[in-house]
Length: 219
Image (cartoon, rainbow, N blue to C red; front, side):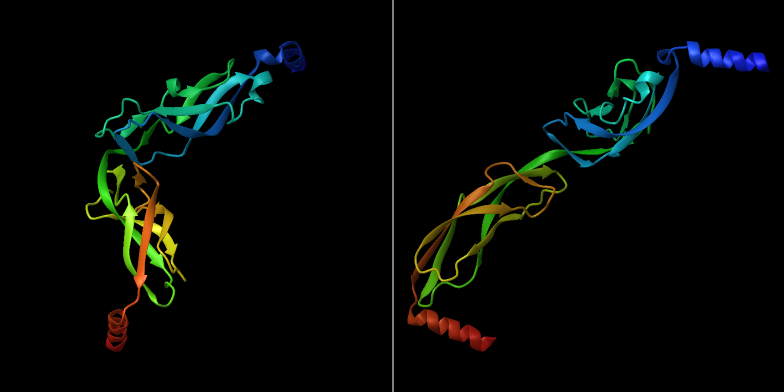
């Protein structure tokens, strides 16, 4: 027993730290690269994976999730492929360390084709113009914009609304720069992100006042 203890002490004393190894498992983000331009990622894979590495004791403490990377490259992805394996080629680790494994060994995701359509712009007015005036016309320029997104999310009949346009107290024609609000968060604007909206006023007539009274009575 004494001889064993002496040998053990000599082992830890004489063997340099770089010759002793340890394993470590790190949870790192799964980065998605190179989604094909004609495709949309509609079901994302796991946000992170566990990577196990082996390295000299002198190095193991320096290895963190900041210098270990997991990358899934979708440059050759297909619409009909749902399962994507993960392997050593997708894991980047510091020099001197060894890759031991990744969990899970595969991930599930769903891609769809990208669809584009032209939709009408619908200005949203708030407030009332100055007494004695009425709104004769409201024009958006351009009147239509191009939106795009996953095929299953792009619906015919969609409109894109502007942000609220406050016309309170307005007494003359005015032009507004407006942001656009998409009908679905999975969509995005393929062209401009703003439009110009022109509000055209005219003097209120007796006929206008009569129409307002008629509507009020019906209510």
